[in-house]
Amino acid sequence: MVTRFSVILTRLFRPCAIITCATAAVFMSFSGSTLQANAILDVEVRHLASTKVSNLQTEFGNQVLLVVNTASKCAYTPQLRELETLHNRFSREDFSVLGFPSNDFASQDPGTEAQIADVCYVNYGVTFPMFEKISVRGEDAHTFFRSLSAISGSDPAWNFHKYLIYRGGERVIAFPSHTTPNSPELVSAIEAALDSLPQTLAQKN
Image (cartoon, rainbow, N blue to C red; front, side, top):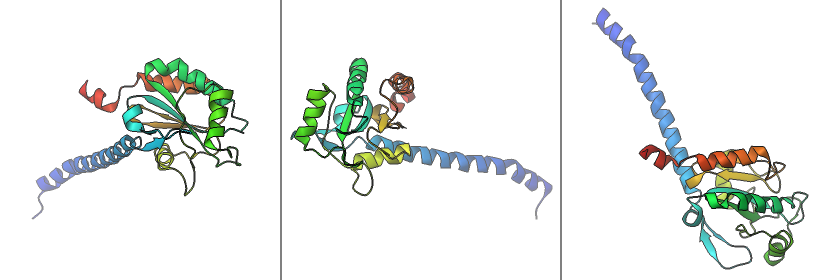
């Protein structure tokens, strides 16, 4: 027998149940995204023209990172010099630029890794870490770039696409090729990332 009192109770608690379910759904979605983000740096990559291999999480997990797919024969290649300036500007604040040569776009990086190293280190004076020549798009894309694309929602459309990664990989923001390393937009985003505490530390505080 349905009483007036039971109807009132149902009306009162139904919104609470809906809110609880919605909150749980959002939390599950956020948690999954965080777990995925925290895993993106757990990958091993070889340094350019070298046998040295680094785990990005181990070596750079506590830093803010700007990951760039580079090319030696592109109109944007001079950005290497600007990236070096940016790297030097913020390197004392736990920031690093990471470069990954790629021949995916108009075959603008066809050389060997030794030749690419000459362009980066000799021609443009690069000192920030450069890694092995990889593919950054499509089915052949390196696992690292697949993860960056998935989390940021932005695939590289050309050489010098940029991914700004917060400490621990907790957030990834993409910038198109035409965004120069010294642009106010990118510099401001880097400063904001450097000022942001990792989620684990923020929760403790």
